[in-house]
Length: 266
Ligand SMILES: NC(=O)c1ccc[n+]([C@@H]2O[C@H](COP(=O)([O-])OP(=O)(O)OC[C@H]3O[C@@H](n4cnc5c(N)ncnc54)[C@H](O)[C@@H]3O)[C@@H](O)[C@H]2O)c1
Image (cartoon, rainbow, N blue to C red; front, side):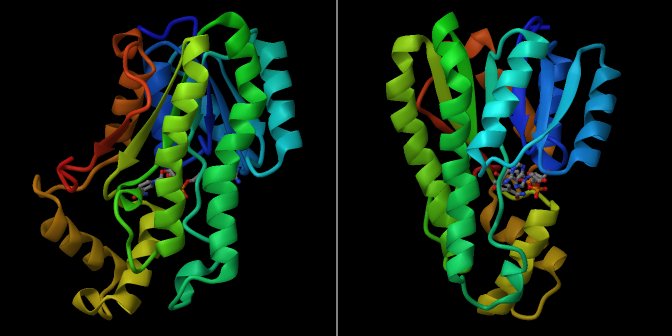
């Protein structure tokens, strides 16, 4: 129970990787705020988390809307007293329907940057003042191995995740004087609704995967690019995040940790 007494806000925490991160932190004793666009699923997730014996609240919010994040901060401080951990997980692969088009559109670039990058800025701006005041905090941003190297099939997404890694380093510098650690995690290949769309884009874009169903693209890619030869899971990411926000990681800041089965050996 290394996180007992801590309060963690997880954006995009209703489903997928964010949900697994919220569970991992709750398992370690943290009280959780599930902040998501999807109110109903966020409430279901919070109710499941409470079965672990911690407090969990669901708050509807869109990370692209600063006023909603302000409200998230105020309501969390009112209800839970403090904010110790911020997980910037909410992310999109593009604007709705992006994968049905052969190339990235202007709206895909805008959406990827507004949610994946500017969304982090909005959350950091609204939720760190109380961390600064209390003189401690942990932030983890969800990047991607796609941010390690430009990818032809999803350039807007790759570029936004490279920006997340870069922004993480800048934030680590800025917030270090307040004893706030800021790190990023770069998930590898996880079979999630987001990756299903990515698989469809690859099938239409890359000759090695042409015409294959998304799951087959995924399975082949695991064989082609992952030395350990297995997919990653949301729980793998949750475990890494849980370590990064624990006291064991108190001297780790400004890092981007790949959880990718060795896809990027650096
Ligand atoms: N799935 C993968 O293989 C993979 C790989 C690398 C990185 N990632 C990153 O991990 C994170 C989570 O990915 P996932 O696969 O779980 O995605 P997902 O689409 O399954 O879940 C994303 C969650 O974020 C919420 N969300 C989306 N936009 C939001 C917004 N504007 N404000 C608040 N909530 C919002 C959604 O409602 C959803 O609950 C993302 O940042 C993604 O880029 C995923």
